[in-house]
Length: 191
Image (tube, rainbow, N blue to C red; front, side, top):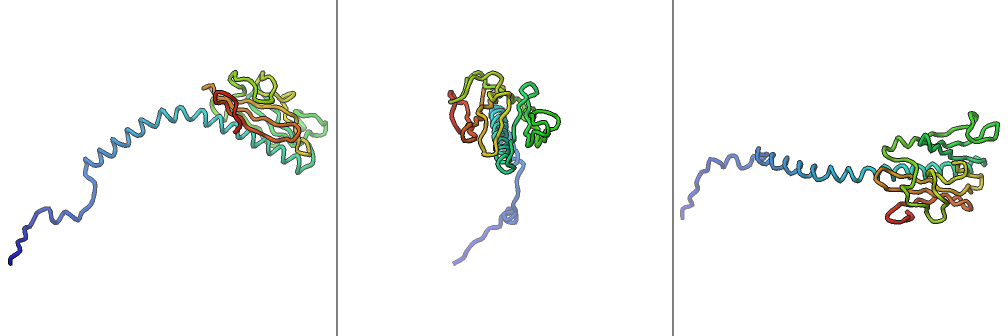
């Protein structure tokens, strides 16, 4: 029995791998379509992400002040400056015993301008549960959250909003010093 074999000129090229120009163009077109779909979604997502980051930063700095007051066995405070859209973390009132004076020991200053489109306020949604009226976005007396050596605090809420009508609130309970975050989603919801 005789077996016939035929020689093909492509036979030598079958083991070579690579991309053709057509394959490369198809892959580039698919990537371009994916980028065009993703860009508008990023534009909607970014303001809310910045708002959440700013709110988490406020809550984290409140926790820093609370734990610092317990550790150092003295009062710490966050001083909110609504006009300057910033706040300070103060670890010591200084020799004069008053907050917000030049002899305070300042741990950190945070500017809301670090979070584009985020500012103090509640976008008109009103107070969270247990909160008082919202005027300038900070309900603490004298715009100051004080933490005592026992971990308790003055009661109050800090409201943050972005330019898309999203809002978040960071509330401190006076009896326990517990810090809770709230988000606006057609009503205030605890996170």
